[in-house]
Image 1: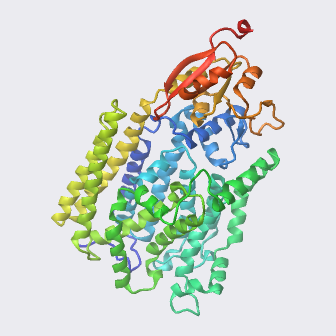
Image 2 (image 1 turned 90 degrees about the horizontal axis):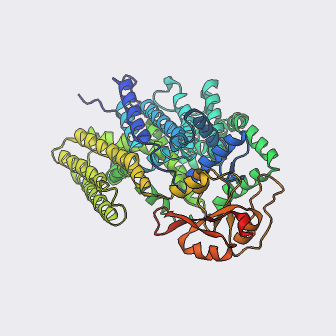
Image 3 (image 1 turned 45 degrees about the vertical axis):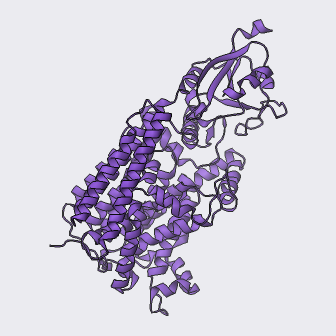
Length: 600
């Protein structure tokens, strides 16, 4: 008997083994996100900046002002640093500790996505949604990185979840048409979630979930003057009524009770500098200007999704056909398929808003991945249970592309191993494993075994992510040898100052545990004294720095080493060299070969 849900009807509530499925999804997500979580070094640039900021705040006993490398870190709010500081207190300072909360919140987001899909559809779609979200590239990266993206996704998803779970069960499968239908507990939890999202990433943590839920209400909320709710979107009175129905003043007030105290406190501690730079430059500025050459055209985010949602993006073309045919066959009011509409609004609003912004990064749209996983799972479930019929060719083509991509990854990895990483000879196995499971899925489709195909593909996607992120990144990280220099700097007495010369990576400060000053040959020498503790450290010339800080050491690259030695007083020489990340350069440590007093 076919147990698949009819997406044109309200979802049923009696779903067997739902807790067993939920536990399995959480277990799989934990495997993908926690396997060898601390094996790889922190990757420049954001990871060591965030982790280093948390370390410095912890060492200073300051839970308010974010500082990294002895300078104000104004790019991100404080929530991530608080989470890291708690992990450092429990587990000690390490890569695992820095990433622990990201992985845990990633698992939490997968669990909430399961709960959302279960409320909107059933346990089968919920299970597949959790598997899809756990085993795509970009979400796995966010859940395994020491960045605020995982926290933002968790609290944004929770806010949207309050809207879904808070809808009374008497609504016959449709979501509530006004937040006034939500009881105070759900409204309070939604406001707190939005406040924590603001502490995780800034104003976008409030605006984006509200825009997603608002778009869904605009599309599905029936207007008295319009026969079909879709026509109500262009009605300004309907827009205003929908906005009022969302109780924005109440939710904003609750969110401010959570977030505003820290923003006010850090503003007072820094004479308003943090708020001015963070709000005007890092938020408003990134929407109107291109920062750090991160630009792109209208196709930037579609391409980013195609790559970031791999390998599940292989199914997007046949699923688009399924979605179109299902919508045309249903001929129903959108309120009867609220799950699909909500997921599509989730994706469209996220991509639409950030496509308008001038600065573009793939991570900006990662919070829409739960919605993307839900709609992908819903349409795959329709196909698996033959609720919508499409030609077998489309799925065969998708699996063939998967086989080709897997072979390409294996060949590319083999070439990279032969040329750059002979120590990691097993890397081609990542592509080979993915190829094998795709080939098995192709065989299943050929024999009309759709459920087995999805099982085979799911296992292949999970293995791909575990091998790539759980083992591959750690193996590649072990190839680097620059830690020799950084570990040596960490053992130097605190009286020895450290400076870089025309190059500086964030990981140098984190792994050396030292404040690293910047020197440059093209600046006017200046004093290193600052009027405020959070102000930037002045950049000076290496000879001026050596004159002000003796003894001292310099870190630079091989092409710049001789130029630096020519500018320094007698007695400086190269003490150690090491590989410079994955570039064809060497990192060089330059210090005094004798007691500075003797050279005088």
